[in-house]
Length: 578
Image (tube, rainbow, N blue to C red; front, side):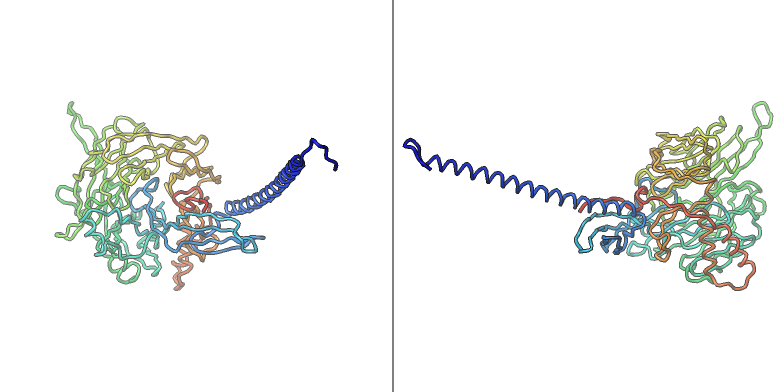
């Protein structure tokens, strides 16, 4: 290259520097593009792995066991569940069945759900909180079968010093380990057949009872031990007996001896009208167990119809119906169960019938603090209304000291109670032919508030069951799962009415078809009874064989499975990234 006299060497240097900068920039851009491409590919690859893991989890969430460490393989992937060995026992006092003896207890598990490729490289990871029932409890629908459910109590809510001293052991705990369903009672003509894991034994019932007698179970917790109370009653008489849970589970002979010591309820001079210590015929309507004292065995509240004739102002006789309430307690001095008159209601215009009166016992804190009873009965001056009052709110065995109101319902099915919070609020639900009515209840407040209605046009409601944090509305066409704003979470098609549904969670690992799943079992108690009878050795008794055949025939129904993502606080409560 030839240089002229006015050119300098610095120009060449600048040209070389500029060329280098251009080359470096191009190289950097190429490198960045390559890295970006690799990063994009990596992101896409990771997102693909995440997608496969997320899809697998969502599609199989109802079939994965989140309570024990396990693993399973699919094509090209291995999925593992790692469970924290510690679990907590919990009660959820919101949107759960708040009736006496109906509380639910849960085990809470923290699990890691991980996905690996075949090279054991981690592809996907999620933390999962999973709640499992501590035990199943069965519901009672008729008088043929009565489930035996040991109550599930929140010990943290037993705070009264007298109650703690009476109910719990020295360590402030319960000694008996049984919880939830432990067996059933089958009503026969002359006997009650008790069936538990210890076997079956028949208890002779009092001969004075009619064939239409009813079976009512109650429980007492004393010094950390459970005692079961059985009341039998028809329209004329009431008999009560009891035994310990330990005898029931471990000593059938002692159980028989205890339970056949039936005590007939008698009246005091101011109590039931009586003929030779018999309650007058056709007078008893209903009975419920409740706890009028925190440190005593349960009492029985009995409703009774009494027809009277009174003279009016015109000296003409008028027929008056009275709905009377009696408190039944064991008198330790007399060593007898005695009925004492508590309060009554008068009706001049409405007929008192068993199907138009209900008694509901709330236990909002799952601690046997159930001293108040909610009463439903006809509104005397209007056939389109139903009165709702409380009993014994102030501890004086009187009606309407707190709640005293009415609802716009003429005829309705069995009411239910669900907790709104742990303290003093709940939801009362009633239903008629095609509409659900929901009210907010607060203890001690005179009126029910925040009324909500939901009508199912073209459907006929057969029952409403509060379970697993929701109300399940059964109609002749569907099962509607509703929250307590009456929003529908899910609807399941059915053909006709579902009979005596039990809400269960598969807790037996030996039952691979149902383990870990949540399902509705139509006629589930009869199915359970049939399975129990099949497991018991046959003694050649023709009657026992007939019972097995009958129960097996009645139990041939398919299960209806629920999605555990829609059952808070049961099942998968939360899924979140590590």
